[in-house]
Length: 78
Image (cartoon, rainbow, N blue to C red; front, side, top):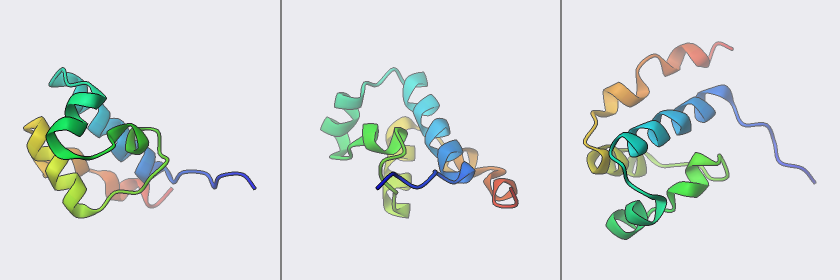
């Protein structure tokens, strides 16, 4: 049985978080060491994230959650 397609809103959220991680020049391993979060799974759209995970990553990447989720609601219409 194949995987279900990832909704555009989740794929976009993952891409935004990956870009924020890369701006901080953090590796997947460094993020895991700091947070215990397997970011690679999230970035590859193989896992959903909780609000707490999102907030933890935003804090780690020193980015405001509003910046990461801005305009994502528009993707729900697609």
